Image (cartoon, rainbow, N blue to C red; front, side, top):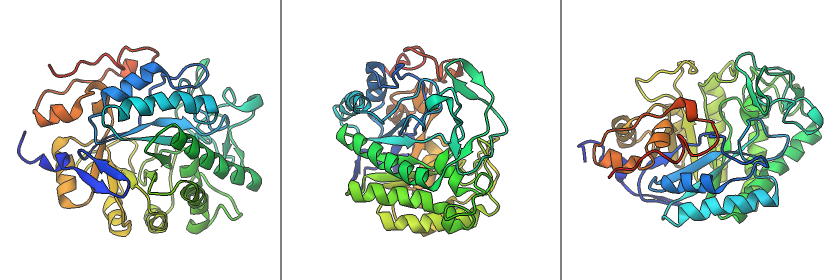
Length: 364
């Protein structure tokens, strides 16, 4: 093992987490669910191949039909979805792995082609995404203007998150992560570039955080034992996201999340020295670390060395890796043996079938 990377191989124990190492597989949309939005045997194989990670976080699973927004992504809003996902949890845990399901509501990052009766996607406010496109059954299409959720619909959506979490529990998952990042529904409520409401869910930082905190409360009361986690992306501009005062917002959120005894808080922010075209340059990871009292996972362009340094410094407890896990299913072994890393093929990130999914070779 290369000197200096030992911190990523230390076991980690905190609350419900008992991990063999500190290397986490980040959630990544891969588009391999079937046409009923069900997990498949191929997906179970894919995740099981990567079970040597200390923790696996699945791709986002839509919490309702309204939440859906990406062709080929899975759902967790029916009993059949739950049944199919159970084979994924079994496959990973059968190899001594730990797996959380990410719960996803795309919000305005959806399209009428996905919505019940072809309605507009929902959001805190009727403000469309300005760049990019939706991945619909008919291919790439421009974003449309969403409609603002009513108060009653917000309350119903909180219940949808709770019900999805309980389905994940019943499917055998070790916990759930709320996707509150990257310009999807919870993030849209948090940031004032997307949230122009004038009621209890808009305006002040406390009001904009209310939706997230109500979801956390609903799930925590229904599934006890540190089984809930949250992912945030304070400086990420993907999906036209912005905020007038990110530091005030995300420091407030970090403090309020302490009340829920989370399994972890997952922060997407480029590693020190790394850059990204969707990063605004404002680093809030250190401030959040000083405020949040639980486990911190950091994510964003890390390698083995920078991950070890982040853990050794105390700024994170765990570090997650995305694309490196796509093409290196045995990533911990490759890090440990200082082996070469295979490059991922972007052409197969979202295509059906095993190519670029389960066919990357393991170390001999």
